[in-house]
Length: 138
Image 1: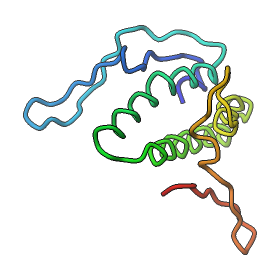
Image 2: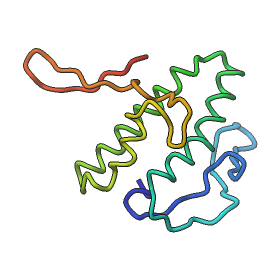
Image 3: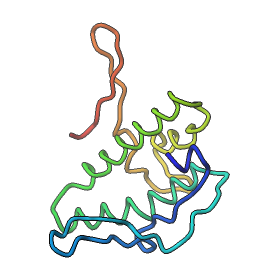
Image 4: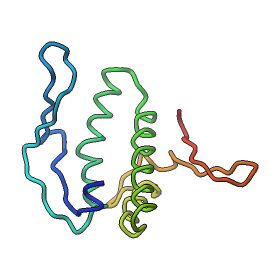
C-alpha cells in the first residue's frame, strides 16, 4: 500500500531483512530493514522486484521445508496482492495500481520468465449476476 500510494519502496528482500523473534515464545516481534526506503516512480517495477526478492525465496523455503505446494503459496500471494491493489483502486484512483494488477494478470514476468501468479485469481459470476473472486487453488 505504501509503495503504491506514497511512491516509497521499502527494502524488503530477504537478504536485507531480519526477523526478530521473542526469546521465550519464538513468536515474531519485528522486522529490521538493512536498507533505507527510497522514492520510486515505478511502484509496479518495485512490486516485481519485491516479489522476486522476497516472496519467491520465502515460497521456495516453505515448500522445501514444510512440504507445502508452491502453487498454493503463490495463490495466496496473488490473492492478497489482488485484494490490496483492488482496495487501493476502489478507495483512491485505479491508475495508482494499473501496473501492479498487470503483474498479476500477465503470463510472463517483465523481462521474461513464467509468472507463477498468472491465472491464480479469477472473476466468477453468481446466478444473480454479482461478480466474486475465485481462487484457482484453495
